[in-house]
Length: 397
Image 1 (tube, one colour):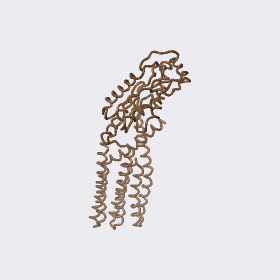
Image 2 (cartoon, helix red, strand yellow):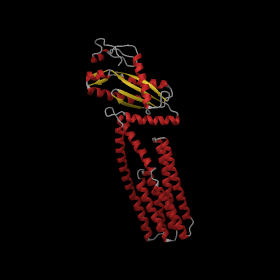
Image 3 (tube, helix red, strand yellow):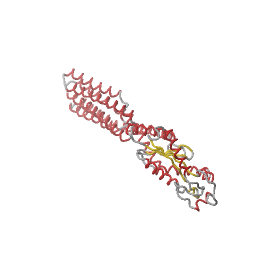
Image 4 (cartoon, rainbow, N blue to C red):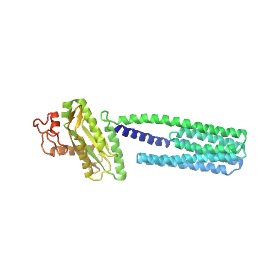
């Protein structure tokens, strides 16, 4: 389950990076807009046609609109990081712009081939080839965009060339068709290669943000996630909770069963945490047997307390270790943002203080006795720890 979640996150990261790359294509937009305008005006002056310049100016306006869209994208992303839903919307908007440019190129090709001046035919063919080649190499990371855009450019050009039904124009139409169909293999190659490269990079970045033992997010990932939630809180007013979690009796289990068993317990703890928290929440290991959960969209402190108790109940279930059974408990403390602070360090200190206060204020007990936030210890399981055979000294765990 954890592996599937991680793979899904990587796929999302790759898709979002694709969208970012699409919006870096500023200079090609300028080049295409200038090219459509230039050939439109030139053909208009050469032939006296008014439609060709009109198509040229339309292509320029489309290019300007695409540049404005890129600028809006930059400002939007600077204020709020892209999520999957937003990335899909921005991809669609950019795709519409690219396809609109292709329509202008195809429209100019049809008009150029309909004119009696052979130089207009030559210019129209050059524009189509140049646009399709540039669009294929620049936008193949999103195949649906590039396939649609070269289709609306190449297919009208093929029909326009066939309008002048002679040997050379038929040959030109065949060249358009051959390169149009051949582009599909190049599109697939560029897309697959880019996916592989970005996936490897995303996996490396993902691994750098994971705890090696438990595969939970580490402190670096926790810092980044906290910054994202803080930004959302500033924009939308969403509060969140930080829950500090400490295992009880983990050292006893580690000493009794060995470090390998202790590692196994920590991995089971990670699985239980992941299964208990919500989709928008984050569980991280920050060291030893210390874990942190960030619960998103918290408006009521009781919600964080309830999650804390559910986590304690899950972590207090028996742990099967190589034919034996280990029983642990857990304690938690809660800090709320922004009430208790707006920095990670301050909230961690507040949650830790709450955790240790809970430990100090709970009734004195021996290690053999259950506490208020753990499940009861079954006598036969306690014996495996040698904790229930005789009273032990009382101490906070």
